[in-house]
Image (tube, rainbow over all chains, first blue to last red; front, side):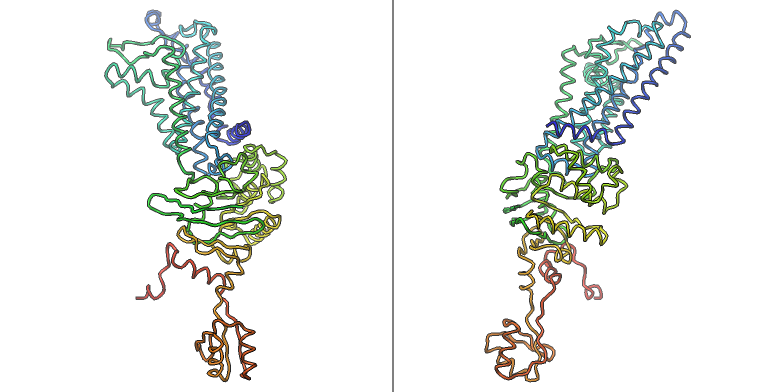
Length: 267
Length: 305
């Protein structure tokens, strides 16, 4: 098992796509700092009355969450699809005929790699944004200690999406298809729920990966009513419910991957 | 030792392998021959546990491949040399494979030297020629120093020097007492490399014999010319041979050259020509697999008419 783990780790770090994805993650940290600067400038140009009536939105880390989730998801997807696309999967399963071991090893290195990546992005984005914004915006008024669980939840949600990508990759064997599903889930899902009737809109909104961090960290729903007083989709899960949801993603994804790789021939 | 026992594999409605049984013994190079689409690669994938057979089984050293804990130390296989991630270096590709079976980096380095890739170890595999990829695939097969080796069409796309290198490598591996199974669709190649031939067509066993046996089987008798042909024909027939006139001479089946010579001498019949005629293995192979070729080219006559 440790042999397979170290082999998968070597595979992950020895291809350029991983370097690019992690490189983009580093750029996002700089992007977050710049975005914070723009936001605080815009905020301070608003009238005192407008500022009193609005919150100014969440932290900058939250606004880049989906992009970090997508990066993590692609890392997961490519872990399997690059092997299917090149045919390397045949060698992989020939040298480790007990295929679930390969799945566990891939899941472990993807989880570890994206956990480090996402934590770095989230914590450093927070640090830079906090330095830029200070206490000039409500979102950054709570200290690091209060923000910690939420930052950890943001990073954790990236790991969940990465493992979801891994499962989709094993199941579909095609990077294009798997990444398309991720994009729908991460970016388009939010728009679609707006058109769903209550209470389904709240349920589906709560199940979306982008809604997980708030619910995992126990942050109450931000906006319940829209500008016209009409209800907008908001989070409804309790903290244990959110953990169960996150675990459900991982279990369903790895379970589907397990069935896919053990039942299918490797051609 | 590889044993394939009543192996059957279906893909949808296509019967890729159909009740195939054969054994591959140590110390010999066994050629696995058949036209394209005959089921050679499917059989090899089944032996490696990559494809689950519909019925029958394949055993390596008496056990199913998937039960072997560190299979690289038992079986080395080259299936498709192009099945590598183009962005990874040759060294990292082999190291990743080696680590799964707890094979050290020193073994990786020495195998790379053995196949002549030591100079390009850190180059990306995507930049490799097909010949270099074949060598990389063979390096992967040799990593665990296994006693059983399987190569699927290893000489495809190689230059003559590479072909000779692989031929000598396989002969050397068999010379060490290892079991070597090598597939090809070319008899001309196998004739030079293999001791034994397993020939399949449409997933079925057509022939399982040594190269010598096959050569003997496909002898087409002896061509004899004599100024006293009719007299000779009578004498040969009464000695049990089948004699048919052929272009002024006689085609004799059932008697070998010394027997024909002795018989003629005893009768005092002069012989002007005695030629044993063996079909080339290539012809023999063509005839054996004629019925099982998937896409037969239309004959000239068929095209003309």
